[in-house]
Every structure is written in structure tokens, then in C-alpha cells.
Length: 134
Image (cartoon, rainbow, N blue to C red; front, side, top):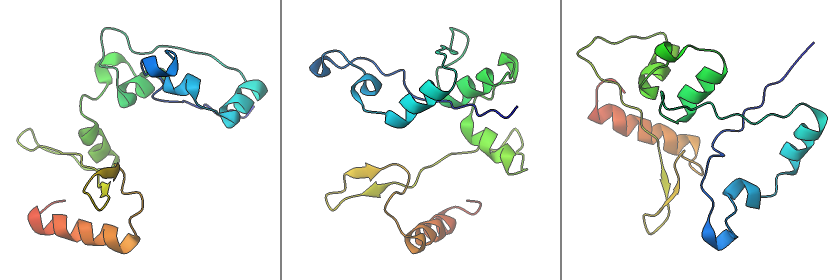
């Protein structure tokens, strides 16, 4: 049997008073998710207990069965390992996002949405000129 596990992450938002105490998910329209629920099996689970920080990486890895003691404490380090690289105890890994801003320098995207490939390459080159191993 083939299966697909769909993890909808980030639904733990607090209710918003001006939305009649609805959460962003309960206020949103989500016909595709509703169709998945209709066609498959649906469960809700809170995977973050008192022993781990409630953030995406740790919760998803725990959901997939990784023991708590093996959960990474730093997403940047975990992403570095996926590139088959390691670091010494004297090095540090930073994880950065390339953001997009409008004409008033207000952030409009935290993931470079709207930037062309050339603009992304220019940003990478600028970073390479600042830091030697980016």
C-alpha cells in the first residue's frame, strides 16, 4: 500500500480577538486540505511536550520517530549535515534567509519571493565577498 503523510505545520497559532477568537487556520478557506481529510485518515496531535521547544524541525522529526535525545538543537547545523559537511566544536553555523523588501524597505517576503535568479545570484556573490565560506 502506498501512503502519503501530509504534515500541516504551523497551525498552533493563538486565536485572534478581532476574528471572533478564530485562529488563522480556522478563519482561512482550505478546500484542498478539506478534500485530503475527506479522502484519507485525519488525526490531530500535539507532538511538542514540555521536553522540547515547540518548533517545526524538532516536532516533525519527533513525529517521524526520532528519539528526543537525538533531536538537533540548531536547524542550521542540521541543514549543514544534509550537505555532507561537519564542523568542529570551534566553528559556528548560521542560517540566514534572503528577504524581499518593497520601495519603503518593508519586508514583503522572508524567502526571496519575487527575486529573479540573477538577483539571487547577485546576493549570493555579495555574501561571498563578505564571508569566505557562505
